Image (cartoon, rainbow, N blue to C red):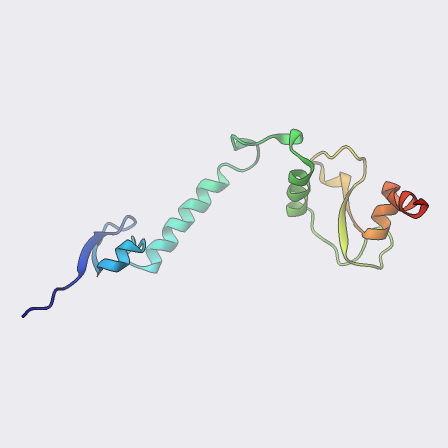
Length: 130
């Protein structure tokens, strides 16, 4: 009695090489002949995503974006210092908007400790008066 070989032949989408895999591997999503071919396709994906950054992206809202989205955008671009930019003493730091207009201008943002942030926004006074 012969044993059944459960291998199938696939074609790598990157290098177009024919390779054999166990049948169950193809069911799990195996498409590439090697890790090298997988990495090559990942580089292509990164290049495509770079081409759609910022205002080139069809979902771009500019300054009409929500506060959370603008904070995330600024956080990615404004380096976080080790200490508060106001008192120069305490971390943890909050991202604070200086003009309260929430625009995508890096010079209009600063990293402050929670206490300095609340003092600048006037929230500490309100909090202590309650």
